Image 1 (spheres, rainbow, N blue to C red):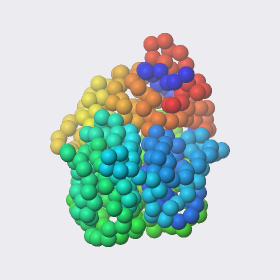
Image 2 (image 1 turned 90 degrees about the vertical axis):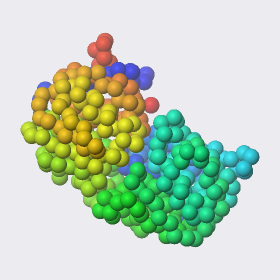
Image 3 (image 1 turned 30 degrees about the vertical axis):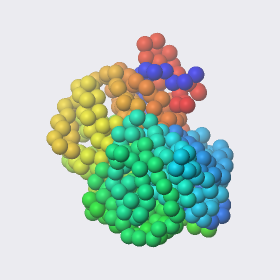
Image 4 (image 1 turned 60 degrees about the vertical axis):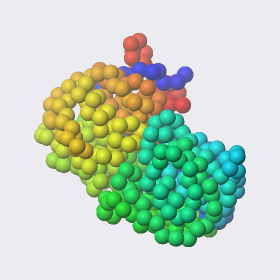
Amino acid sequence: MPLPELIEIEPLVRPVRAEITVPGSKSITNRALVLAALAEGVTILKGALWSEDTEVMVGCLRRLGFEVEVVQDPQEPANRTMRVQGMGGRIPRSGTADHPLELQVGNAGTAARFLAAMVCLGEGVFRLSGVPRMHERPQAALLEALRGLGYRIDSPNGCLPAVVHGQGRRPGSVRVSVEESSQFASALVLSARHGGWVVEVDGANPDELPYVEMTRCLVEAFPASGGEFPIEPDASSASYFWAAGQLLGSDISVRAWPNSGWQIDAEFPRHLPLPPSLSRERDLGDSIMTAIVLGAFAGREVQFTDLGRLRVQECERVQALRTELTKCGGRIVESGNTLTVQPGPLHGAEIETYRDHRMAMCFATLGLKVPGMRLRDPACVRKTFPNFFVKLAAPPPHGLGASVCEAGSGRLLTGNELLAD
């Protein structure tokens, strides 16, 4: 039975002592899948995330003709071991101008951007499309950069759907703007060695591009001739459990906390309790959303700055956070790309998640403290963390022991009812 359309999180009434295992990093998994497909020989990815976004990437790679085997991970139900047969920079399958090879990317931004650059290495024609929201998300800067390298890209409005005419290796230098998304630069960096591309970045200082730096580090560390590559836990997904510990005054930690320096959100625990100001560009990545929902409990005003990129992700996240926190009695001021959160009590409300996994997980975390928190469309967490509600409800020390109920009936959800399939 799937998760109900509307659920309620019941607050925990006593401190919890827990050590939580979180699934592998989505950002690293999808980058590693591209690098494994472009490598020579077989690569084994251990601890890879298995969620909506990574399933999309695996499905597209298989459609392109790559052999990808996926096996259950015994340590974490939302992880897999993946065996990828690399083709040394060659794209095995393609289409023609009359019949392009269709690649459906859903609402997976990483798949949309990484594959657009990767299929340029092919010899044929590819059409990338997604859900309506993906067709609204920015793509123009990446498409212009690929055109600058000499590839033909057909897109009337700089978004998906887009038709890519692969022409193989075309050495050259290219500059790409990352003002709207750092994934544009990451897409080029992932395929640069096989394309012969030298990639330079416009629109930000290197210190403001942690996800591009992650990509460069992965390219350097990845076994280009095949081998084994471990995927570390997802620091963005882990932020909800660090936040729960802060909210509840509990001893909650995350097992195998990453120390590679690749994930900017691994810095999240260092920012607890919250400082007076946090930046989406310099301090945190997606986990700044988790920090924003904690803001009312900081005891003083907190400013969250440089939030522009949140506006063009799975939903218009700045507006969504302000709207839903205001429903809960929060005092939030939006000014440009800054949200200022005033301290004060919150109350429960029916939360619209906007089909955004991070909105659902942020407000579910609040529900551990605030009575009456009800979430619409909770199954949207399947995008990156399909067993998130299982972790909330599992007894300590491997979960938080929270009660997750069907709203209205009050029926307690257990077992597979908590999975977002």
